[in-house]
Length: 347
Image 1 (tube, rainbow, N blue to C red):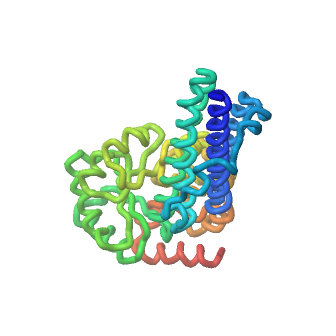
Image 2 (cartoon, rainbow, N blue to C red):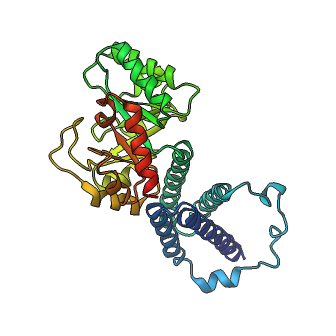
């Protein structure tokens, strides 16, 4: 009798976990149209199916007693309503995690190795939940932002303040401060100036590389390169609310950044750039790869100008990050408007 009751419990938990994973998979597949997260969810579901084969199907069916289950008619009010598709997905994540925990604990009574494998699966679900949540956060924060302008120190603090003010006035979605040569004190001063100008506007302020400066200046975001801090270490400094972006140059780096919890990506270099020198250019084919792999907000970087913007947009990447194409112009706002007109004409 005890064995039958145990198998019945295991059967119910396996079913709950599999059902929840299917809901998660449907969300990232149909609502987010995200290939990478869909593959991760599908892999989890298939691995759970493989593990469930350790419990003989005929035993599970024989032990099942749906009509006599006292839990089938116990439903809390908050279980019958959902606010939006993400709320459905989030609830399913919790359902999966709770079912896996039950499987792990009671599975120890059947086979310790089975319990250990379920534990590993549960940790992978946590990672997928984190990646899905940070993708949604980035998508919401950057929903209307298609243009990011990279700026350096400029000739003086006044010149810096002037260009930031012009870009904010022009309605630029995001401004990223990137300067490797300034002292910490000067960099913090520029960052605070930028954040003061963007505060209360639709423009997002981002600091490149320096998590400490971004946090101290009160920036909206931090952008990391491949040689900078990891997303995990940066998050420990800037907290949970700040956007974190990661520059990527290969599809493996994209996958790593998404699973690490990046809110957005930079992808490139696309063309030769006046801002940064590269020996290898990922090019337009790489942008197509990224657009096909993930729905995480992605900015094409490297040498993007009004002359080649249509080529970039044809890859499926709809956001761009540019520097001197705008900041070296005597009329930055006019160049920003030119980018907008071209982007609109290609839609």
